[in-house]
Image 1 (tube, rainbow, N blue to C red):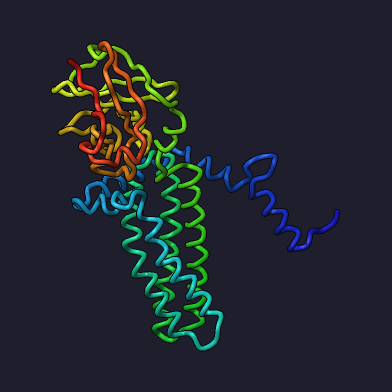
Image 2 (image 1 turned 60 degrees about the horizontal axis):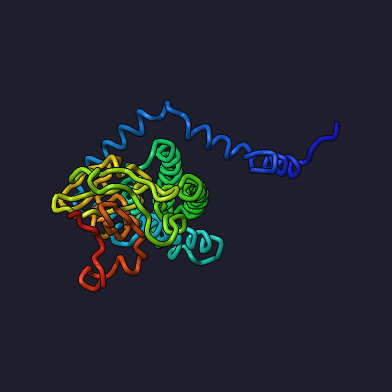
Length: 326
C-alpha cells in the first residue's frame, strides 16, 4: 500500500472535514450534533439567568444595538480583532516590539465591552443558537487568555514567548469568528426575522374578517396570503395590524400582551408600538412591518405600510393609518 506524504494526509483530512457534494463534512456535522445536544442546557440556563439578572437598566438595549438598528456586538469586535491582527503583522517584522505590545493591550481593552454585548445578545437566543454561541464564547475566551499571557510575557521582556502566545490567541479568535459567522448566517442569530414580509404580501387591500369578532386590547392572529399578521382592537375602537412574527426571533406576537399602546412579545419581551410597529424596547433591533387599516361594511381590511410612509408623522398622512370601528 502506498504511504501518504504528510501533505497528502493533510489534504485528505481537510476534504473529510469540509462540506462536499456528498454531505456537510465533519465540521458542520459536529456542529449540527452539538446544536442538538441537550446535555449542555443546564449550563446555558444558569448562564442565561446570570446574564439576565445583571442590573444593566437602559444599557441593555444599548448593548443589544436597538439604537443602531442591528446588533452592536459584531461592530464592537472589530477593535480587538483588528488590533490583534495588526499586532500579528508587526510581530513578523523587526523592531516593532513596542507597537505590537501596544496593539495587544488595545485589543484586550476592547474585548471586555464586546464580550458584554455578546453575552447580552446570547441570553435572548433559542436553545440551538445558545449552544453554538457557547462554543463561540469559549473560543473567544481562550483567545483573550492567550493574549493576556502574551502581554504579560512581552512586558517581562520575553518577546518570543509573547509572540507565540499571540499567534495562539489569533488562532483561537479566528475559530471564534468562524463560529460567530455560523451563528449569524447559518442559524440566523441577530437577523431581522420579519424582513421578508414586504416581499411576501401582495399589493392592495386584504380582507381580514369582521371587526366585531376582535376582542378589545387582546391580540388576534390572522393571515394575509401566507403571511401571519396580528390584529389588535384597542379600547377606543381603533384597529391595528402588524406582522405577527417578532423581528427578533420570530416569536408569536398573537400570544403576547397589549401594554400602554404597545404589543409585547411573549418570548423575549420586545415591545412594538401598535401605531407604527416601532421597537420601543429590545432585544428586537428592527421594527415590525405595520399595515394601514380601514373598515368597510364592518369588515377589516389592511394593506402593507411602506417603510417611508411608516416613518412619517401621523399628521402628515392624507388618510388615517388605522381604521376605527363604529
